[in-house]
Amino acid sequence: MVTKPDIRAAFLDAAERLLIEEGRAGISTRRLAREAGLNHGLVHYYFGSVENLMLAVFERFTDRLVERQRAMYAADVPFREKWRAAMGFMEEDLAAGYPKVWAELQAAAMNHPELQRRIRTVYATWRSVLTDAFTQAAREYGVSDAAVPALVTLVMTFTVGMFNERLVGVDTGHAELLTWFEAAIRSMESAA
Image (cartoon, rainbow, N blue to C red; front, side, top):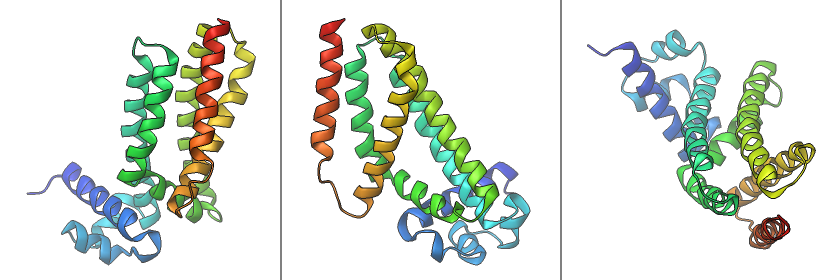
């Protein structure tokens, strides 16, 4: 007998694959069920709607990446090394499909208040990770904690922007931006 967690996981895995491979527009309850090898009525039984299932995919994917980021930022190494690791993770995340899932669901949320609320929760989670990391870095480099919210917003905005551009094949200026950030971090290290 298939257990409830196994059914949920099968639907989440199937939905994640479909979101990455085909995008949200082509995903129906029957398509999800076929991909998961389960009855289509179970989508609504376990998730309420296809949208809720898609958001559960996004939240699960986010949880995995947040766990990785928190572990990386907790390492006892200079912030500059953590920054490099985080920027390397961007490539991994693109290859894994996370930015595509994010973009698909953000677009779906544009006219759906409940989806917007859950997307905002994901943004808040990422802001929390970055706020913790940047607060520690600010103290390491003697920068005022007051600068942290602006730095977090800047990094969130440029990361999402770079992801969105990369999804459509644009990478103009990305390497230069990352080089600029690296130089700014080195400058703060020197000043500290």
